[in-house]
Picture 1: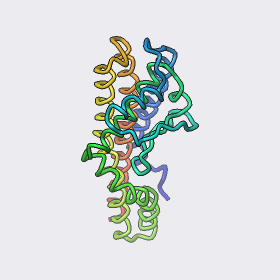
Picture 2 (picture 1 turned 90 degrees about the horizontal axis):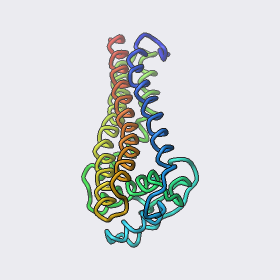
Picture 3 (picture 1 turned 180 degrees about the vertical axis):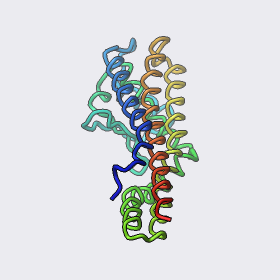
Picture 4 (picture 1 turned 30 degrees about the vertical axis):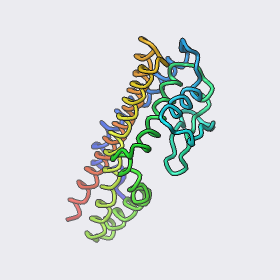
Amino acid sequence: MPIFDSTFIILIPAMLISLWAQMKVKSAFYKYSKVRSINGYTGAQVARMILDAEGLYDVPVQHIGGNLTDHYDPRARVMRLSEDVYGSTSIAAIGVAAHETGHAIQHQKEYAPLQIRGAIVPLVNFSSNASWVIFFLGFILGIPSLVNIGVYLFSAVVIFQLITLPVEFDASNRALKILSQRGILYGDEIKGAKSVLTAAAMTYVAAALMAISQLIRLLALSSRDE
């Protein structure tokens, strides 16, 4: 199975960017997790405040374990905030909490990219693993039709990652606008929150680049089998 053949070099730029993005988000979050906001609101309080202001009274804010595991679950209509965000009064925590409420607002307003992403999740969950199995099975057995099916299935992963980009950038833009308009953060605090959210957004850009690179590699491998 040609996992580490010459086409592996196609992945190196995306791997380096992914590593850089992970380091960037950890650095930015750590830096601003040490800076307490002037108003002293916790991440959970900010999430509740914004949700209520948007009429989302029925969306609970829950505490979960893990590090940066924060997310809005559109199926359960639940906001889940991690240990470092839920009870923290830092600029980083408030920025992340506001970002997740941005997703809840997207859901409420039926933001198209979010709806499309949600609709293809079952397909992506299947294709992300099955695509590789089918592709390499076809590659090893010399069955072009299976190779092509593998490529088509992995294309769904690429589409998912690309759709994720506007979803995440829009959520961050909504968050920063709300934080400023409602006076939750001020001046340099907004800049700090923006730094954290911009760094986080880069991890999604890196994920999209990795998916595209993987697809290009599959295409390169499939051309050998022709």
